[in-house]
Length: 257
Length: 245
Image (cartoon, rainbow over all chains, first blue to last red; front, side):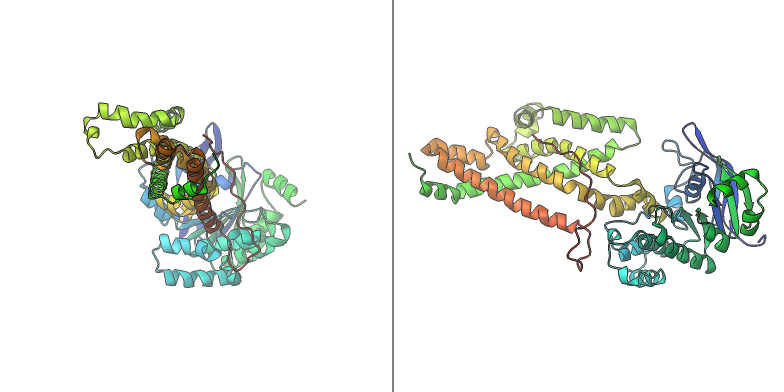
């Protein structure tokens, strides 16, 4: 892995909401084609880390490196930390997020949801965007639902549309924020199947999830977070069978019953 | 004195009444359209990161909601020309004065409705737009605005009906809208029941046509696939407060 190009990197990220320190210097590297699963108790900063990696939140310290460009986006008032809004916008379309609550656009059909990025961000001709969107919906096995609006779809179907919507941009990295937590148990599998396919196809992924089966089968590395820090990182087989840290052991006991 | 149907129908279909109704409709529609644009601007300023802009917008809403509409109308027609000499010229017509007064007054109410509508759009929608690489302006236009419109259609419909009736206030500045022509005709023949009846029918007709249009607009914002007739559409938009004056 050492020679592989780094797709996305967190360098000493510090993030706070008011007095609450959510991330206390988090560093992490994800090589191209790698799948990293982040676990940890609620409030450990996993989702915040993901939003910072996706350039959706400014940070107080450190930086994110995407596409070889180091971004130190600082918030606070109008200050953008010297980063133009335009550059941030362009980089965001390379690190796209799939959300726990799907966040599909309710006023657009599944097809239109998938076409938004290509049409308005990549400036693709409409016919081509449409063709690509249909192909992507087929790929997530929703070709027959193209004309449906989000509220007419099940949670699992909505999440698969959301994945297709992101794929349509051909991003370098995909971020998944608890993608199956809002789903009924019987719908989890269909989403995890699609994610496993993506992993096999070589997509770089950072996944915050407690789907341990996905972590075991698809992850290159599992990261344990607690109190805004990375506690341990290991390949899944070692992470689940012989974790070095006491904190990880306690957490695994909790989630694995 | 029995109700004379001939006088009623004659008034109802008279060119004077038709012109009065036309003036009422155009004044209300123009003022409402301007109020939506102004109101959107004020609502966006109320969400500005800069405190002075927020205060200015809040003051605007406070001022134009607090002062009676009739007083605002009289102010624009009588007081403004004293302060601004160029407004004494003939181009500053009663219609224009009524339009300005009603549009500004209404925009304060629209600003509150639109503010509530913007707040009703889930924050996850903006995040989803951003993560796709949409610019701030694109997120607003493609994602936030359509969802805001859906929420504000019913309260805006209420506002328009209110505004339609508020145009009758312009009779005090001699604008020949529906109520003015009714009063003027009554002053000649004293047939109160017949003429008030004719005016009532006109107001009912205008509001009915408008309600049909609103229904069509709401259907367009239902976001349901057409090949599934039984569907009730997207979950009901959250209720937001409406005003009554």
